[in-house]
Image (tube, rainbow over all chains, first blue to last red):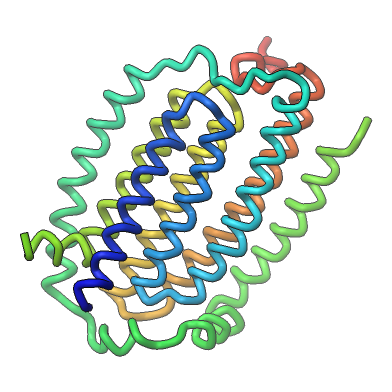
Length: 171
Length: 108
């Protein structure tokens, strides 16, 4: 990887982390939702660098274009139009932050060892795999080895959509 | 310096970003009272899981299976967001608030 590409990856990681911090801590829920958009975009860039081009596209279409807009609509429908109070009142930060720091430090230690173990045993054809376009193998996997989970997810999606419409119906 | 950049652009970087997103998601879920804010935290956690799947799919297996798992995560997260927001809208119509402390209809 060239130096410029590495710089872009580091920038994407920084964007992801900073916007995720805003998502978790910003008192205004509307700003938190908008910064979730930046997090999703940063994760899409990370996917590209991990050799997951198709997933990056899905991430942009489903998350950046779908879920974030849905959340923004919900924010505006429940708070914006009726009252100008968007603040998340009564947030208790101390205990969650302590728990988070403890959790992250232990996770960091475990993952560091795991990553060293994995990197010491590189799989065959890593470079070749990373450069491969992934749409065709994913399609073959979905209609081959993963046919049953694929069908289950389609039924789940149908159920979720019908359920969402039923739940949100007018009185 | 050079080796740190090498680590951050490799598997270590992916795992660290994933761990940070997971932790921030947990902190967001625990600290927020607004139900939409809790949903944002859950989305962060699901994205962290997807990052881990994709990273190990490249560095451990060099196979497509991890990416298929990440695809399923994205699909299920979308379905979950749709249902959760429908529930939140319904709850708001009932209680005129999205505060999770007010969600006590099933108590007693």
